[in-house]
Length: 130
Image (cartoon, rainbow, N blue to C red; front, top):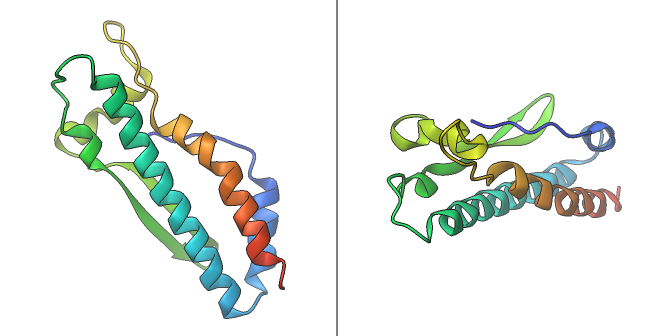
């Protein structure tokens, strides 16, 4: 699974503030995180398909293996987004970054970077009533 680093200090502060909010705020937060994860997954799948479009790819099943899981615990709500491990899904890091003999197909990191500001905006709006 490919992981991207970004400054989430403001988002972490918002999550901490939401920890003290009523249960409805947590439900709204979960909805925003799930929608963001869904959008990132779909965008990553579309990006890989566009890279593969010019030629019939040997990893044509890979886009279907990009999924997401919601993760909720006392620390907050989040999502893990990436290919299922096993089969072509195990090639995710090679496709994202490329190898010495094949070019990169950046799909997960760009999808995350495009969706992160949208998720932050909706989380901020969800927190306004509280």
